[in-house]
Image (tube, rainbow, N blue to C red; front, side, top):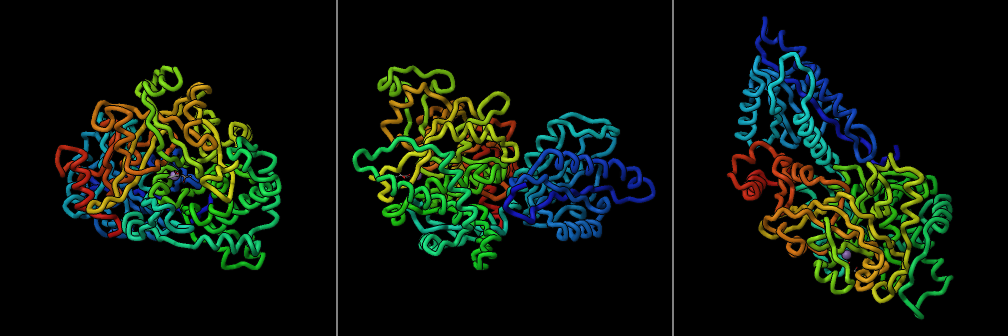
Length: 590
Ligand SMILES: C[C@H](O)[C@@H](O)[C@@H](O)C(=O)CO
Ligand SMILES: [Mn+2]
């Protein structure tokens, strides 16, 4: 695998048991350990980290019947880098004596729904103990009674386990890594005010800051791998086709454009090396630079100081966010344009939950059906019947966002290890690299231009910081829409036609901001959104609850929502209860 971060967290499985020897405990050992093994098999065969490695499981050495065995299990988990804990049991056990007490570990308990032994009674008792002690845990309990001899994991239990583990692994993967701020605040965009306190207390992450002059230093002193640079440049010139130049008679001459390509490619190598290091730099005598900043996400300010005289960051941002490059398929890195770290966090959540490349966009225009008809004569229908949101941005959208990869005969974005040569070729062919608009970017550069294929299920998310509340998350599931080329061109020409477009139709529910597409756009918390392949709203909500980030707006169906049991104790209006629970428990890392 070409994953870029190591020392990945594991799932720890805790088989809890009734501690009474001389009959009861012995009769339950096999069934209890069997549940743990079944979960381990499910996870390792189903879930992968964003790096592509399967999620590994660690099972306690013995079943846990009391506090000594709980402590032995905790020691084993610490040794084995367990970051998420799942307790399983078919029977009654002693709640506060067997429970996992680690406050940082996302937790769940699966109580077997059989009636020979009271697994569900333990589940209720131990969840009560978690709630009483302020250690939120997710409760998992199948809806149908299983026979005591049944060793299968029912579908509803399976879905909950997978949702919990995906979100828990995302929490544990972020912890201890960093966000690298390359530059400072871009054009007064609040999301690019990189707030160390938020990253530290809510995500357990460090924030690293460098000046954009570090790019200049590395460019001027050639601090990058010259061999890879030649390979990357040749690949780029052969595969990245130039598109429309919006600068008319003010367009740059071919020599300048060639220099902008060269600089853009060098910037890709430099940004990647800054984020995750590169052993080749040590061989070249740059040992400090070879280490990188341990960054799981980063942002590039770009506008204005840099872009007022240098090529913009668009090509760099696009390529790092894409799941392939001149070296073939590889783990996408998360790089936010305009250093909008809050949108970067949305992308990071999406990437960790799906192991897929992410789309970064400006949330630019709401086009009502009437407005589309007025300017183009076209009548929208189907998913677009309520109108569309034009997602478009100069940088940071992955090439995967063209939707040229196919999943189940529909446009999709694949995990990088499934990306084929044909997928790469199609994505590149659907994309044109347009000379930057010099009105915005005096230093030029190369923007990515495509229109996302229609019918792709996507989820748009946004994290916002709100004074007096803290971070809140917004989630809108929906799908992409392909407008006829003529209609797209008419609408696109009014904006920045050299940038990539995703036409987004959020799924309307008739409730609150999801009464209309206009309301979704009007309620959006900032100028940007992070767009992930698939309908991942419920996973995002589970993740947000683990981090104690309330969800201010979503269109996820009730049945899919899965939060720690304590959330039910904060009242019957789910949104209000979420805010109260998050406030009461406070950020995961204090
Ligand atoms: C070129 C412009 O400055 C754009 O980059 C700007 O409208 C934004 O993207 C704001 O998010
Ligand atoms: Mn923007």
